[in-house]
Length: 127
Image (cartoon, rainbow, N blue to C red; front, side, top):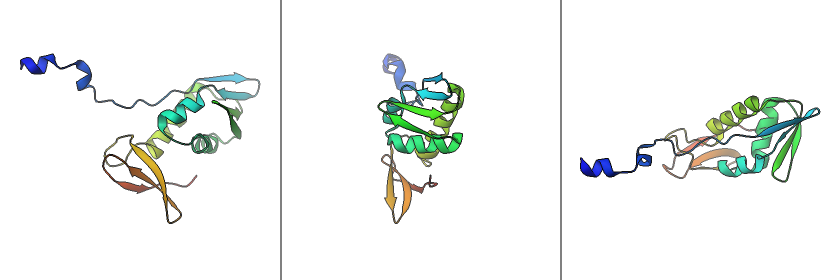
């Protein structure tokens, strides 16, 4: 019991991965996600893949310039962060063990989500 009490509190935290928040600014008729490169690197995904998903879900066009993404149209940060969370649920988190330790691999023209933790493989929806 004494050893149990001496363990740091962070041992009992079950959340190891936190979905990154995108910080956006609306300028004119465009929305700029200032930390888009950081969001993609935290997710361990190619920024173009994340952008392609966001553009498809939001029904708009856009591009990546350096560390930021520029989207045509006005979108609140709530909408953008909801779409990033959906992306994480579909393309980052393992469907078997719910860990974020995954990579996207291509097998026989099909994109697969391969978990580095448990070894599970699952087909992904094409973008």
